[in-house]
Image (cartoon, rainbow over all chains, first blue to last red; front, side, top):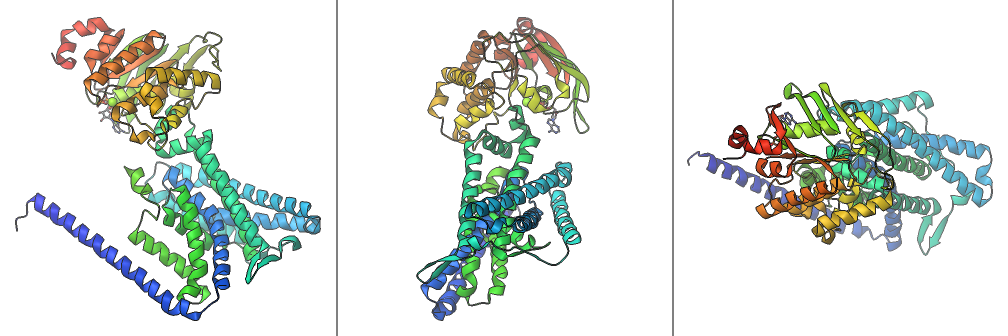
Amino acid sequence: MTSSPATSQAAGTDGRTVLRQLTRVLGAVIVLLVIWRVATVGLAEGYPASFWISQALNGLVLGGVYALVALGYTLVYGILFMINFAHGEVMMIGGITGYFALQFALARGWMEGPWAVVVFALLLIMVIGMAASVLIGVALERLAYRPLRQAPRLVPLISAIGASLFLQYSVLLIFGVSPHSYRKPALISGGLRLGDVFIPYTGAIIFITSILLMLALYFIIQRTKLGRAMRAVAEDRATASLMGVDVNAVIVVTFMLGSALAGAAGVMLGFHNTVVKFNSGFIPGLKAFTAAVLGGIGNIPGAMFGALILGLIEAIGPSALGIPTEYKDVIAFSLLVLILIFRPTGLFGEVLSEKKA
Amino acid sequence: MLILDSVHTYYGHIHALKGISLTVNKGEVVTLIGSNGAGKTTTLNTISGVLPTRAGAIYFQDSPRSAGDGSPNARDIDIRLDRLPAHDVARLGVSQSPEGRKIFARLTVQENLAMGAFARSDPEGVLHDLERVFELFPRLKERLSQPGGTLSGGEQQMLAIGRALMSSPRILLLDEPSMGLAPLLVQQIFQIIREINAQGMTILLVEQNAQAALQVADRGYVLETGNIVLSGPAGDLLANPQVAEAYLGI
Ligand SMILES: Nc1ncnc2c1ncn2[C@@H]1O[C@H](COP(=O)(O)OP(=O)(O)OP(=O)(O)O)[C@@H](O)[C@H]1O
Ligand SMILES: [Mg+2]
């Protein structure tokens, strides 16, 4: 064989094609194995349909919460090409603040008042949680990321991890290690029974609120002047500034929007899990990141659908695969690794490569 | 209207502009010509505030606009541009159509035009200018809901100029508007530059196509490796044997 550059280049391309095909085969094998396991173990258990429906509804609730958090990752990535690994903590701060707002409302007896008062109090709690998250998100951008805007990409990532730990341990120091428990008002404690399927009010409220917030965000991004400026800055900062767009202001607003959604998620997760503590943003944060990657990071509808899919997989997965529920986190994170190997651009396309071009 | 006074610009250690001085008067077309890497784009980006100056000053002066044109800031302008961030320079009415068009590929044509009008708060004025842009570039009107990235090169150039016009600029900076276009389209673009200028627009035109640029311009400057080596009325430059040899390919 001659070693002319042309042939070695061809060999290189061949090698890559072979590798790609191997990955594809490996991926197919894994999918088949999962299907086989579901067919022989999960379905063989013979759970009733109502069981699967309940699990799926549960998954949608979690998925809605993940989606709100995932949107924050994806928004920031879309504009700064960085992963805000402290975003889970932004959510946690919203949850903690929401807890104190809830205590305040409980102490004043608002939670036993007429339904209008309860609804108003719940909204107020969420808004306060969102406001706290917005403050933290803006501070993060200003202190941990903006000074590193010109640095190599790895540097802000390390700063983000540092900020994440800083926020966790600050909350630990101030509020202690024991979990703070959210007490649901009686008004939303019950549920709806449809045949054999039980739909808790909290779950339904969380899901609907999540969807409304997502629609609001989508409207802002697609239909407002601010959203247009955000998309322009995401594509080309310098050119956007030539149009009179204050790029720094747009970046701050992006952090604000993402953090507000995370704060709402933190409060709702508090009601859903009934507790918050210093590290309760960590795992949901990683899950939401997984969801964002699943949908294609930087892709806004992708983050929403990726999160709903992840929520469903996590809720149905353990029973379907016949493994204990405690392992649901393993499912989510295995999924993350598998996506990164087999489809790094996520389920919904080529956003990453498009932006690099 | 626009005065650069010995402006120095660096890229890190690279000294790209070595004391540029030039003037653009109201209503003029001034062209900046020079070979690749001379510093033409750097000059425009320094004016626009995308690049910081290391030394020197950039002045922008303008009388208030005539009443009734819907301008939100009808006051005397006399400002040091080199002290402002890019978005404030743009808001003053210094509008650039950048080299390589820089269309927002994922925004529709309509959204790209709206981005041009981003800093404006006079909806009627914006509508009026939109009509004007459609008159100049009827093609854009047929492509309104198409993503900017799917336009042809020529259409993108029209969109870039249209977008710059949507800001209702006091001065228009054009960076190689004829780049990569078929000869017929190049002619058309220069015709449009003439038209816009005839309607009263002040223009600073950067071009590789020195011949065509000098034909539409009132005055010209020749840039060589970060220095202005020659300047004068466009006709004189066209007749100058040095210019002819170096830039007109004669
Ligand atoms: N981002 C950058 N980093 C470092 N050097 C740069 C950068 N941009 C331009 N330069 C250098 O500055 C000098 C002037 O570049 P500029 O782009 O202004 O040239 P130009 O006259 O516009 O050329 P062209 O006709 O090719 O567009 C060149 O030597 C170029 O290599
Ligand atoms: Mg150039």
